[in-house]
Image (cartoon, rainbow over all chains, first blue to last red; front, top):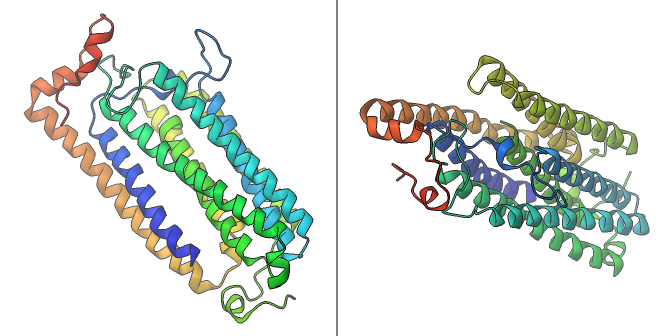
Length: 199
Length: 145
């Protein structure tokens, strides 16, 4: 059943990203992401480190996906303590990603970017396309919301595991379903990261 | 192998095809793909904005992204080891995306071409350099609907 929900969610994100692509194709000018996203926490006044911070975020999410896979595998072997361990790591990874995204948003907002306001110039020198920030905050916000809900779900899974619910049921299939959701969140980030930062 | 309930028998059957080794292998593949993508992203920085080189590298990045998606869905989400029917339930609707993306990007491009052709004011305003003054000028985005 989770697969069916994920399909609908995939089309929602797909619609957002395709709208972003269409707007970008319809625009004469668009900001260069390497000019916009070039900072990281503690960088100071004039940072010039494009792709660094977002790569770290991507790795955090990939690693949290790996720990989720390990949690599911431990569930197949009915090893409760290993499930708990890997779930905790996954939750930490999710929270770390959210923290990073929150920093990115705060940093951009401090530079004047927000829904309805784009302080960055297009790469051809013209006044920045307003939809650049609109799309960025909407799509990363929607994705961040999914990460947040995923973290909540994982915390619930952790509590259920600790309470021995799955031992009693005789299987950890619920963890597997939560895992599907978490991998979906990671998958969406792969697309969002590529569309906004790379191409 | 396991004593699952009948629900899981329908969906999973003998689907536990991967062990820790497979997880490590896929993790390394994903990491390598990401590192290559980031490297290509850096490489693109020096390239000319609308040149062939940049578009080609973007195309390669997209292919790498699709490869990553394949590995995440196939191995982490375990789809590769599921029943054929479930795999098809996912793959076939996602085939819609191919039309979705091409149609809309073509549409966006055509919109831009036509708009530039029939609205020279818009074309001029969106390609001229922004004035050098600070704050106030950024508020206005000309021609945006």
